[in-house]
Amino acid sequence: MDLGLAGRRAVVGGASRGLGFAVADALAAEGCRLVVWARGREALEGAAEELRRRHGAEVHPVVADAGEPGAWAQVARAAREALGGVDVLVLNAGGPPTVDPTGTTEEGWEAATRLLLVTPVLLATELLPGMRAEGWGRIVAILSSTIRQPIPDLVYSTAGRSALWAWLKTTAAAVAREGVTVNGVLPGRLA
Image (cartoon, rainbow, N blue to C red):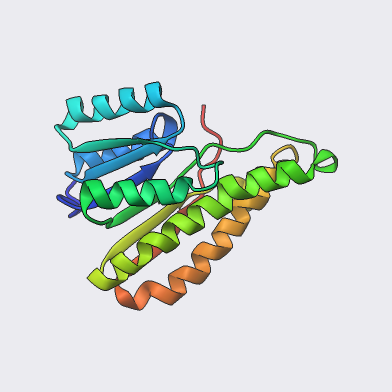
């Protein structure tokens, strides 16, 4: 199916495996030029090579950890250098550790918030002006069905992704008239 994405410039987080890799694979099949990023160098470089092999795609891997300060700036800079701008941004990262809701810590909340809210919001905020200026852009966040039906031990993940969902909805209303769509996807458990 042709989605009209050939030649578009896409950035995909968590792209070394799982849903992130599946999204990068689909975008590469559509003819997108890609920056893929994740924290593990070996797995990410393997994923990038696989995308090139399967689709002959232009793929630029960027090793960055969404849980670390400044990762968003590193990815934005690399995307601009490699692609000249970004049309499609897929916000995706692994989840924080499980914890009993009564056993959370300040450090746990800070780490989860950086991973699931701060990094994605700052990355999107950095790239949105270019999309708005071009009158076209797509931002899609991979969230979780737990924001609708929480699972007790996923309290950090549920709270962080719920906050990101609120930002997505607010931002979608602000930029829709400029040709930029902002959406979240709520997958359930994966085998």
